[in-house]
Length: 159
Image (tube, rainbow, N blue to C red):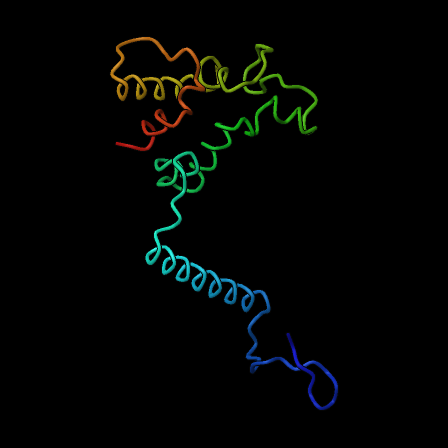
């Protein structure tokens, strides 16, 4: 908080050197988080009191992936991905019909993973990799949503 100088106007508590206010705020936030993390580490190392429950721990495989890949994974997992049904639900589209193919079918995770004509090449790669990782000889998983379960997530990010 700024103090008042002898003229009654605000005075900054430091020498202003032309740095933007946004930059200064970001620096303060970064220092705050460093202090908070070090405090938390010291508390946990001394007392070992807090251990998150198994269901609260993040899935380690998406956590190791890039932010863009992990974000898309969690969007697909929760059903809040930018495809027809969700866009229709939030009022961004009038229809939930697939805009990639002209077959007039509802755009869903299952449709995009299995039968959309636009993504045939990518689907072949995906299912070949799933078969390789799960050691299944032929056929696809009945439901692509099974790929989004925790155990299947490990398939995607391990090599």
